[in-house]
Length: 472
Image (cartoon, rainbow, N blue to C red; front, side):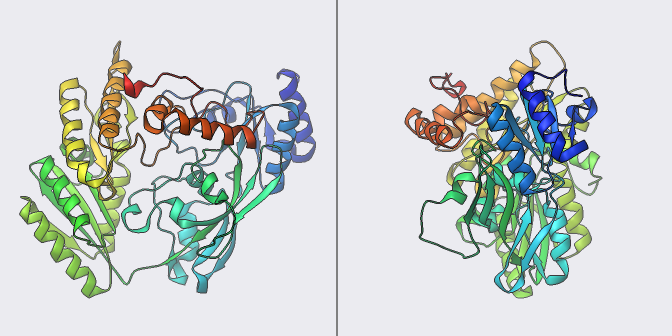
């Protein structure tokens, strides 16, 4: 059945097929589905796809692959944008999306345990009648295994933090098939190395996460959404920065520039808005606290030439706004037919955010490319969706713009990625951001935990002495 595969992979396939049956497949359409995430320019067919339904399945797969020195790339929702889930041609794609059980909910302790294939949406549907929710919201149907692996955040990070702050513990299968439990259910501990933190953001290069212990939060008594539009991009960014600096406990604060608003107005039917830079806000708390927060932010916006500050506690209006925000990438693609999109992901300390975004806007205008701006500006993070024109040299022009924006962020004390991670797409910036000594430590950890380099090889860590694009 697997005779056409390379010998080592054929041996792995036969062993796993004995235990997992038809969950081991070489079907071409299934392999194509596992050849890429949502990012563009990152696709490669795996030799084999294996569907795991338990930690034991993952342990069996890794133990077998370790023995035969076959590479393994974990796959969940396939929503990553930096090539994290793209396998090599001689690799296995290990799909955990069928691991969808909510294993325990501890209402009194505000925590729960889920399998890696559970999504935020499905967990929150499960929790709704308990008055609880999980806040980290990267958009899309991302799974918790992938959200942990990429240290995801999203629109609510300004209030609730990222996956790093919201994971109490993990179950991880190591490269040789050993099962390791990290952390626990307590809110703090002073024992041993922080293994949970080590695996959060490791992008499947140190182990494969199969279970996650999560912090939960109570659903706020009152939630209000607001918008404010600005003729000037800098005024909008200064409003967001001032909101954070004065200590308003904002739930979300998102920026869409004029190009992104034009795309969203068309795609998400926001006809009651003008195509100018817009801030979306969300406020949470008691009715009195929400009203106080709204009044403070409205005054800040007015001081920065804000136009038409409007707020509402309507669930329908909140849903409409945040659905439009989460559809921003697709709205941009729809606005430029025939183009592909590259999503940048720069972040800086908030005091430098105005300089970074206005500088990036100038870079975009000088490039002659279309590149709508959208971002979680409350924590200093923003994205440009660079539209790659269908013409010779278009991709190279887009990547040069990406590099300029990253160089600006690094020069201001920032990072090349606030939430998308590294994968293969941001490898060239790692040395400039971290320095070679730090990368040597990272490589030593990788070698200690995965000496045969079978776990997502070629991702996250550039080879030693690799030139960096950020220094070009």
